[in-house]
Length: 152
Image 1: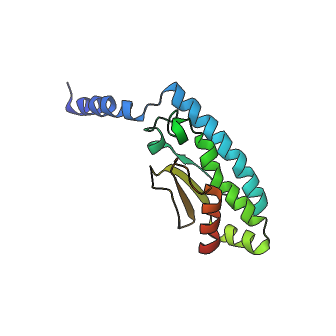
Image 2: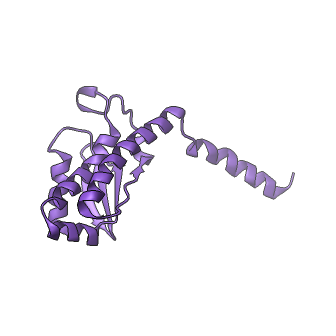
Image 3: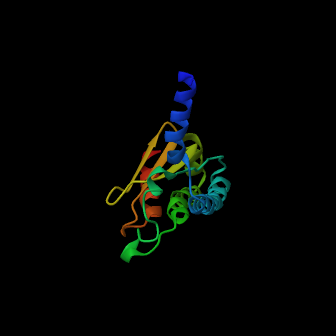
């Protein structure tokens, strides 16, 4: 067998399972992204922006979303990931200076799983990154809104 052909088979064999998603994951991804997109349309409308808001699924896919919440209840990724967009929506409704600052500084909002005790928000190169922690605490909307108001 040709060595190049062997290499292609090996790469395909070992890469495919890592990239494959179950039907349940595909459905969860679509449902959650639809929830985020709903909040995104309100934020873009309020801010006069064309922000994008992808969910970075790498971390979420390794968590049992049926038991990750308070008292081992299920969590809605789309709801958590929509909170930064709700924060931007609220901030932009405070007036034109906030709208202009958001429009100038934020082009993308990425939501990812941070892990227990690792809720975080950061802004770099036009991307607002929100790291989710499913543990109870202060509302994420206020957490993000405060961060953005103090960093743009």
